[in-house]
Image (cartoon, rainbow, N blue to C red; front, top):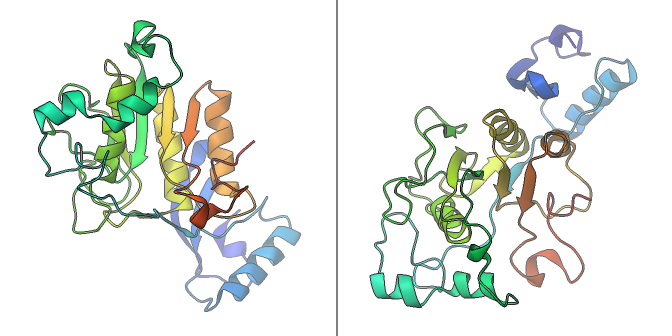
Length: 258
């Protein structure tokens, strides 16, 4: 729709767009409450100016990486590798191989596979990741490369997730797409835009180690994920960190996507 046609909001601002998916992020500077935003957009929906609308709420990763923990200590930015521990004490690798009579690496190590990690960015200089990071990575949070930097408690999360990817698929290439800041905070639209960028870059797999504890699908993400699936891209998402945050039967969205 033309923004000036939105009822009572002649100063609506276009904050971002993903034209391929017909997704638009709109700011309503003259509207002062969430209820008013919903009322304005419901009116626009009724008039046929919009197909649907959804609040662009924040994502926030739950849980902080424990630098002394089983998996966090090996890949977090600024933390070096204990070579003996790296080779002999890999909790994640042990979990990966449980249930297999032979190592999955006897079947494939991911050669020729591009895996997009949508997260806090990546420390591409980390010794465990050298030679594994695609130069096509992007930063959708601010200007600059998709580095895993900042003062937030979740700095290093994207590097950690990339380390897990490198364990499972050591011959793959990792495509870092920064959609969260160092506090692990982002928003629905930015994540959807990141999914689209991954598809455009030719990613075979998209890893979303994030999610929102909500009962209903987030339409903005659903549009982007469905487009990725139509392109044959595998999308992997986190269900959440334990029953205390997601409940006995629940899981986070988009992991709960059918």
